[in-house]
Structure formats: structure tokens, C-alpha cells
Image 1 (cartoon, rainbow, N blue to C red):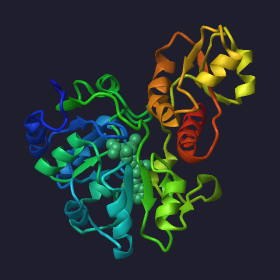
Image 2 (cartoon, rainbow, N blue to C red; image 1 turned 180 degrees about the horizontal axis):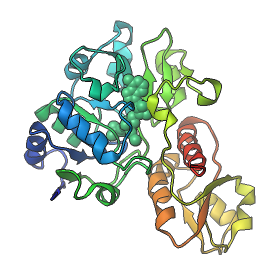
Image 3 (cartoon, helix red, strand yellow; image 1 turned 60 degrees about the vertical axis):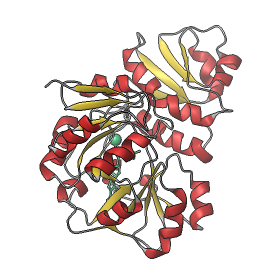
Image 4 (cartoon, helix red, strand yellow; image 1 turned 180 degrees about the vertical axis):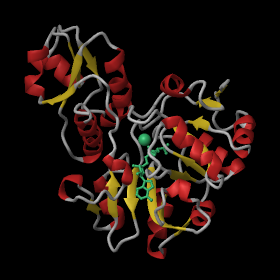
Length: 329
Ligand code: TXA
Ligand code: MG
């Protein structure tokens, strides 16, 4: 299949009507969002949604997030618990997904048969304009299943060129890790996946929140959690910063902060810095690019520096731990 590449200079103004038409005809479009790139089909076209699973190699019981362009569209997809409107209005559009009871017309293909649905009102103008012109868009991250989510056009191209109708090139994603997922179907908000909106920020907004911990329960609440994610094919290990010096000039690639390179690996060649501890959001933005580089690099394996676990670092460490666990396939 020939994939149409749409390069976007001005995300507010450039013509994306071709992408919109492709969606309406049941085709797949990869598009930029402020978190990671998404692979979209119209949520109300079950046949198109099924193609997403085929292209990605994604298990059919792993539900998709529905992307909307307004709070009106948000309500068309799910039953919003009235208590939560003030908070939703405060943090959307933005890098967060809410799980609510689904409306009956949302296809089972989207929700993996669940009676809930994940809904996201993204801040990225391209994502918004697509959902405005074509309708709610079901979209997982635009990577092949098991690979790190794509945060650049090049990563999407690598995985999906020739397999889908269109890729919109909107440059690098601002946040670089997937949206925070909050399940609002219970008594207390439950964070299923930490992300750009931090636990601390959610506590400020909601009061108390619970954070899902896969080690403490056998129930996979977010079906995606049971699948291997974000991991390079080569072995990847987590190490404390003080141990990094041991890896200087070996055939193991070291992914570490600028501070640790300066301190422990000053003249080493086998280092890829993932950003400065002083700018943690830049580390989030660089993470998946760096994990993808592990497999492309000449090194046999890699180690990655252990980071703190508060604020946005907690979300970054969540992804790093999954990548490291992926080592034992
Ligand atoms: O930032 C993001 O959320 C990106 C962009 C494209 O919006 N999307 C994304 O989608 O990361 P995906 O499919 O890679 O991850 C969605 C996660 C999966 O772990 C899935 O199991 C979970 O959301 N999920 C979707 N619907 C759910 C539901 N009804 N209940 C619980 N978890 C759900
Ligand atoms: Mg994904």
C-alpha cells in the first residue's frame, strides 16, 4: 500500500482534509498528539477499528482510547459522572485519558468488550482538527505492538510506512510519554497509568486518588498492562547512577542523565544522554527515541540509569521499568 505522507508546517492552518477523507472512508491515519503519535480509525466504524489491531499486531482484548475534539463529543462516547465535570474542564484538552461507562453505540471492537471506555480530549491542534472534521477517533500509539511508542515522524514511518493509508508528520511530540489514565468509574479516582499529568497534580485536583499497582493485585484493570511494552529487543538493565562508571568504554550502551555522564562517564564513548535532571520533561521527551536507538546502535545491550520516583519522574520510571522487564520475553 502506498502511504500518503502529509507534512505539517502550521498545525493550526495547514490543509489536512485528505487525512480527514481517508478516515471517513474507513482508512487509517497516523497523527501527532502532544503525548505520542496515534494510529487512528473512526471509532464508530468497527471495520476500520479492526484494521488497527491487524496492522499493529495488537491483541483484540486490549481496548483503544477514543480521541474527541470537544466536551460535547466527550459525552457522546461515555456517561460522565457529574461530580467530575469541574476537574475535567480544568485539565482538558491535555495529556490525560478518563475511563467512564461507555455509551451503547461505542463498538466492542474499540473497548475490547468492556463496558467502559477510555476517552481523551487531546491538546494537539492536528488531533483536535481531525476529530472535529471526521468524528471521534479510536487510536492506540502508532507503533508495532511491543515496540516503544513513537514520538517522532521517523519512528512512525519506520513501523507503519506501506501498511496504512496516511501518516501526518507533525514533528516531535511535546511530552513523549503516553497520557495519564484515570479510571473514574469507582468511588475514588484510580490512576491506571501514570503519565504527563502527575499523581501530585491529580491529588490536588481530585483530593484522594488511588494508584494502581500491578504487583499488588492479580486483576489486570487496564488490559494493556499485561502485555510487553516499550522494550527494545536487546537486553536492557536498570542501574544506580553510582554503578555507571563500571560500564565506561564497554560494548554496552549507557543511557544516562547529563549529570551522571559528567560525573561518572566523562570521557566514555558508549553513552547516550537522555537529558538533564533539571529538565525532567525533556527526559520524558527523549526516552522512547533513546530506547529505539538501543536496537539500532552497534552495542550488544544497554543499561539505563535509575531515576528518582516523584512527579514526572514517577511516570518516566514506570515506562523504564516496563522496558527493563521486557528483557525477559
Ligand atoms: O497518550 C496516549 O494515551 C496515546 C495517544 C495516541 O493518545 N495513546 C495510547 O494508546 O497510549 P495505547 O493504546 O497505546 O494505550 C492505551 C491504554 C492501554 O493500556 C489500554 O489497555 C488502556 O489504555 N485502556 C483503554 N481503554 C480502557 C478501559 N476502558 N479501561 C481500562 N484501560 C483502558
Ligand atoms: Mg501503546
